[in-house]
Image (cartoon, rainbow, N blue to C red):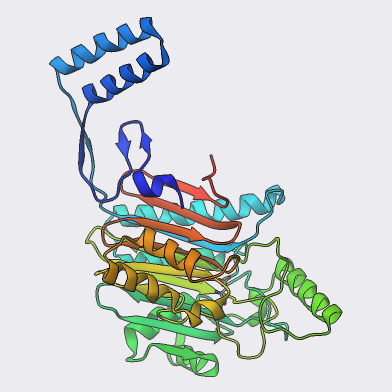
Length: 382
Ligand code: ASP
């Protein structure tokens, strides 16, 4: 958990404390500054600071910390990214996050609604081959790609998901069409492909090889090699532990106070026939409700399904009256086991959670107060 998530960061005079309007008198800051210097024993500087404080007291200036009107948090997967990862990979991950965050923020600034922003941000990441979603998705054990995605509207509780799709360029957009245009929530495999067929040109289709990348092929070879050595066929992911898995997710609080969340993934490297993870399952990998919070998860999908992670976090916000930061930490560090993954979330009050029990989680966060942070390991990148 980050300190700035709990108490805000003082940067200039802007305090990133979600949804609070704080009026800060400059003189108070100067007095605090003078007192600190005095405690450090720097009398000349103290005198000067006191003079400034005296002037400030005569002409009180109020610095308004604006209430937070919108916020967005994005993840690009949790895992064990090596701090020595090559520069191109680092730039690919951080550049991809920064671009997606920038687009999301500018849409939000123009008043876009949360669902549209979640879909747009995720399609950008699905196009980026650095992430395990859309192009760049991992391979199944059979050497192809089967993609999962879901999206949820916190205002209406409308939601949609697709699992095991093979020819849909943007699974998140097909999930949205399930949400918007059917009375169902989840379509999988041939059924999801048939649903895409029924929508004709409204759904962009590609050959399965469109999703191919050398990096994902290398991971599959490594997984299959290690399985051969162990003589066992596992269904869980046993890819290189130094990797970041690269699933993507996004949670948004828009200017109208509505929440939305979405998640998209290629799943786990070398996954078995028909395996579906948590990402397309509402309540496991994705959840949003304006009354509580929006959540998107990344990690070992079976555990997220087993524990209903996204819904569990929202239930804690609702039943325990705690904020999403505390609720996410309780689940990620108390319910899930070390190394299983992470979550992002925003609650109705604008608190932002980025909690993970792996060594790292690729993430980006921004808000109406000018916050723009990208991180992989504990500290945000400079
Ligand atoms: N949760 C995804 C799955 O199990 C994978 C991930 O988030 O990395 O399919």
